[in-house]
Image (cartoon, rainbow, N blue to C red; front, side):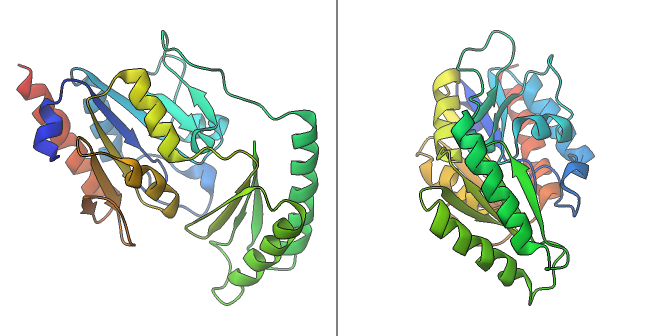
Length: 256
């Protein structure tokens, strides 16, 4: 399906990764914010007829709401922690965000502490706490040393929690005891919205789960380089914003 087809599909779901897709990647994760052009495009899509917008992110729900400047009155749905946590607009249906039990918390915290010890002597490396696990960040690490941090924690997890899901992204390796992915998040959103067409856009390896899951009635967009299952590629967040804004305008015009 083309963007022209999506512009006239009866019920459109626009599901978007956040970091590296709507917001530039930054060294301080909580400083990430949408480009003004991205915010304008999202607002136009929200206002378009029969269109649902969702952010689908690996971020924890609380952190995603901060960086997306998302409040309780927002019409934008959130699938956080790769689809293990949810926020749905007023009137939406679905399960409340799941929380780990005591045993899961104890193991998570123990492994996180051990991981912090393992990377303590790697300058710039740090461990990001997550609801269902943790991430190893090396964006600020010398290229020659980054593999050291990832390899040490990989060995820890292979020994202590081989059943946890491992994901790699831009200068991060994530580990989680929940196995949801962005593919299942998009499918759940499709069902909740009864969408007849889906646009999904993302920039990283974790987004490929969702891109591979799309059907003939959908459009996948890869932001930036790398191998992809997407049917369309844009250079960066700014180009994606232009594509999304044009789609919103076409969709609104088609219904007038």
